[in-house]
Image 1 (cartoon, rainbow, N blue to C red):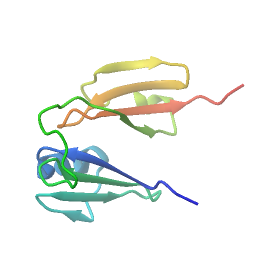
Image 2: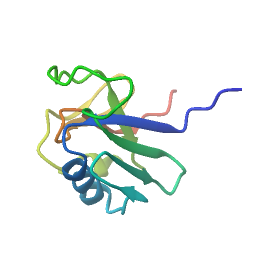
Image 3: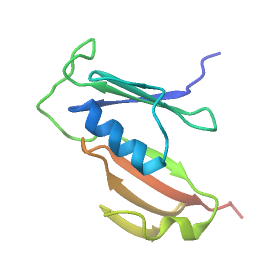
Image 4: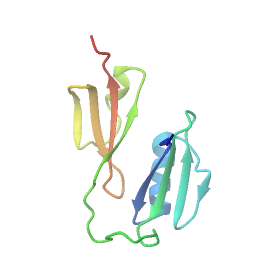
Length: 118
């Protein structure tokens, strides 16, 4: 059976993006170089940053349109408020209380407190 346990984002400047994520999560990458960086979180989730200039097969380096989101859940609704400059302010959505920010490469990052279904 297949298992998904890593997300890779393409970065225009891996070192800059790695510094952003290291500061955001107060975590040190297990690997960090000019073309690739890897973070391993306490719950086993892995986040890779791969240079958009060296990824194989190549990707369109001109179009910087985000094509997805990474969602980070929190244990308390108050943790959603007051984090960073946001593209979506904290709001109640269908699935829970949430906000969204951009990383240095324009990837959307969403933090949410998931509401339990009644």
